[in-house]
Length: 191
Image 1 (cartoon, rainbow, N blue to C red):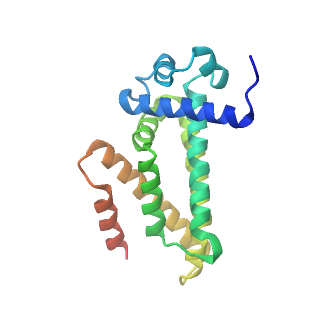
Image 2: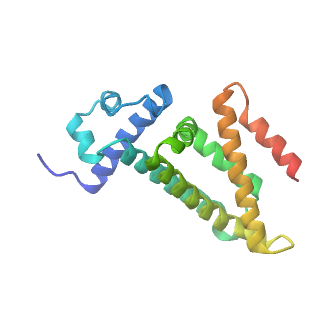
């Protein structure tokens, strides 16, 4: 069998991750088996397992992909001296994550983390990385404010993370709730 190029390998891994996200959304994280993901992807078990030994590694890859996309998005927001506000960053972060169809998966991972040490470690690691990304993206805005720039960026980072997690959980539990209306209310209140 010919070896896959790096680009083909990454595309195949993304295809598998997309199948896993669909399964997680439909059946929950705990309710999804590797067999479900294999069936959903349309690939052979050998192909799946040659890329991912299990759900934890697949979830790690998915998380890394999402994190890289957020890193690029935040970099684009702050390019050429722009200083996006915490509200702008919060709304963009939520829109991108909801648009990628991963908010339900995040809630499932957060719910399983207290019972699964691998998921707990993954969640802590990714939350720490998101915290760093947000802090860096908020520094230009914080520099336009009165006060300690690092403290303002840190406070805004924690606020965004709490609001994002809250909106994500609320939207998952109450699909009829409009997260944009909820976020807009919070933004008005915090002005």
